[in-house]
Length: 147
Ligand code: HEC
Image 1 (cartoon, rainbow, N blue to C red):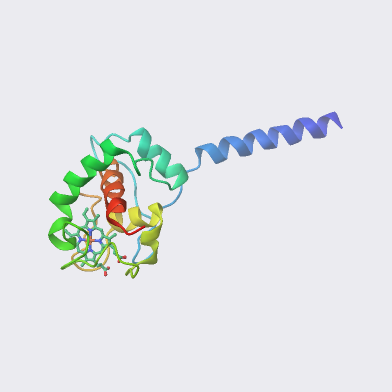
Image 2: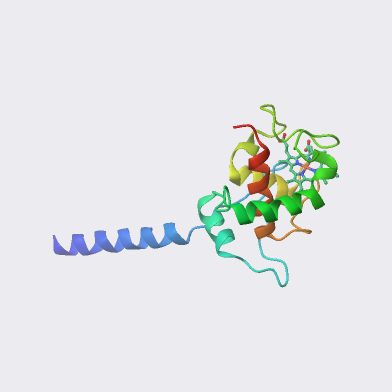
């Protein structure tokens, strides 16, 4: 009996360790191939990025500082196609109920679209923004969306 208990607790500990260290796999919205989230040279993997990789939840959502930084990034990198209010021009509306990709509704899906890109003009932002910046821009995009 004792051996069984020891074994069982070892298994539980091993499971707990692997769950806490486990990172989600993010996939291309187009072909579902895994996205390479290896940081670019010099890119800092922040606590927020680490937490996001484990949970798929954007820790910056609703955080005023991050949203303010995300707004600046949005104006620089996204506004030309999606408009300042997200209503869309060359790129689709980000704020209506209808979406090109249903995945937009979850943080993990929104990250997959922005990081990995879509078709046409929606290039992958993995090359131009850090993953931390993408989380900030996502937090700002969420403030534009209708509740
Ligand atoms: C040069 C124009 C352009 C820029 C700049 C651009 N996008 Fe896009 N975006 C598009 C187009 C076009 C699509 C539609 C892609 C498709 O159909 O695969 C799109 C699609 C999207 C979608 C999916 C919308 C849906 O309905 O599912 C999201 C989210 C998005 N863009 C966010 C962003 C963010 C955030 C930025 C800035 C970091 C950005 N885009 C910059 C053109 C652009």
